[in-house]
Image (cartoon, rainbow, N blue to C red):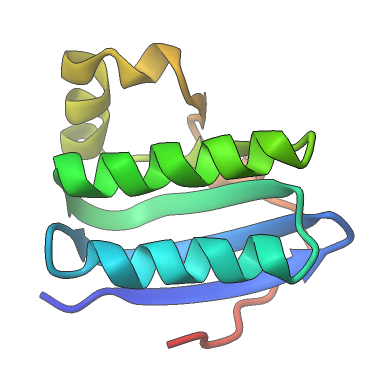
Length: 118
């Protein structure tokens, strides 16, 4: 399954919406999208995971890397509305204690509009 990523910045916050499956093959695309958002001036990343069906350890590693990069800019990364399968991976790996996890897309900024990024 392909991965679709869109991003919208609002001040120092970027909402990165991800749809599909994050695995060894699609993780570089996710990494590129997150790095681009940070390089465009965002310090805080909100990753909308509500449309992500699957995320393996490679994907988790990319998310961790982006969170560390955001923190070097005195920012952070939050995962928004991960599906039960993704949440289970977070719990099993202990990453649910590392990431900020918002249960609902209600946490996303209201004015965020998606623009295709790749």
